[in-house]
Image (cartoon, rainbow, N blue to C red):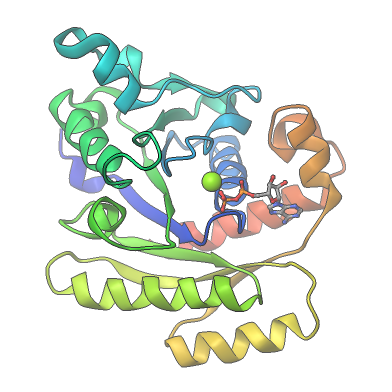
Length: 254
Ligand code: ADP
Ligand code: MG
């Protein structure tokens, strides 16, 4: 199978900014549209896919490598969640011990070795990546041709825009080796004053654009409290429309 045809995208951003919320709702939206999606959590927090798995954390690739060694199979690390989304968490080392990005490198190597893409044949793979520091493992998705399109989640808060700028720089620096492109910024609103204006100015400076405005909404907590995305638990949901729009936008970028 030619895995080159799989659409591979990476969602970066500062810790706590809403990457996993955005990514899991995006995956759910794409799954509802009929796409086979694989979501790979690349954050030592390992909670990227929890809202696709009924609120439960799945064992990480790093944990399973330790537990199963040579016996490890895809069934130990790939779990089917809401809408048939294939969920993977890279995991990370014990805090203070070893490089946080190591889990990502191990996970990528293991998924390749076990031919995960050939086996599950996803249409779209989405990497949900912590972007506070884009070194080592955290740069993996944008190096060596893993993800072609990168989106950054940010609010108007300085620290998240600072992270967005760092990610943009990393893509430029690795761009020659890989082929990742920064497609834009998802504005996940924190409702700070003049937020749109601040972010519009920032994307101009970074040399990118806002691809979607995601409002702050209590629907997120409402669904999250039940362990899922807005697609699983809500009806008459404004946020379903927002994430459908994001999904359409990303599909149009292909
Ligand atoms: P990250 O993956 O970047 O660390 P999360 O996706 O876990 O961040 O988001 C952190 C918290 O912010 C989540 O618990 C979620 O409830 C909340 N959140 C994210 N986006 C929104 C939003 N658009 N509206 C309301 N709450 C949100
Ligand atoms: Mg997260």
